Amino acid sequence: MASPSPSAGTTTACGRWAVGVTCTHLGCNIANPSLGGDVSFSRIACGCHGSQYGRDGDVREGPSVRDLPNYAVLVQQDGVVLIDAQEQVPIGTRLATT
Image (cartoon, rainbow, N blue to C red; front, top):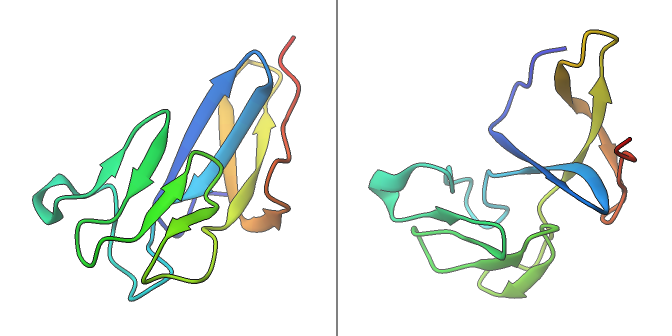
């Protein structure tokens, strides 16, 4: 169930979620700092061509017109958190934290 594409996971009081960090414009790896990308709690920014996304992966500024994919998050019995990048879920989907 390893992720075949770069992704970032986040946990807040609202739950856990995961967002792909391959830009939907031309496929740049947003998480690669040498390309000038930025993945933070408040935004995701592609350094290649300037696309901006909200923390849920929704497009805020182009040139990209497609949101970043959101992936299923699973917690194993031993507490290990996994991102299943083969199962896309709607933006805003959260796994409840306990």
